[in-house]
Length: 127
Image (cartoon, rainbow, N blue to C red; front, side, top):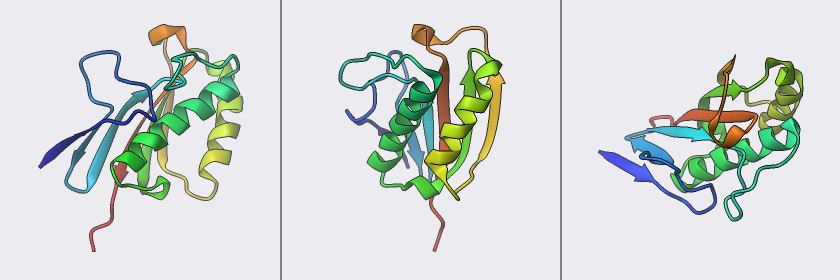
């Protein structure tokens, strides 16, 4: 069974997509921009943008009934790969000992001219 996830604790979708899609024990979270869900404004620094995008991702994960430790993969899209070290420090602090698989790539441009976008996959362990 497929379920589309929607929460006001993350920015509303700005296109024809769901914030997240749950199929059985797996959740696919659409790319999250570093936008404040209430004001739709973005922070100035890559560190603050990384944290905001991760918080938005987690809000969708939690709205679907998952936990941070259920996140198994993230995709990181950076406007400038020179920001990798700063992004990585915030990412590491956010996840602590939980280290999902990850890819990080540089892209030429992101929506709203943000510096970062993060998507993810979460899975609940079958009992």
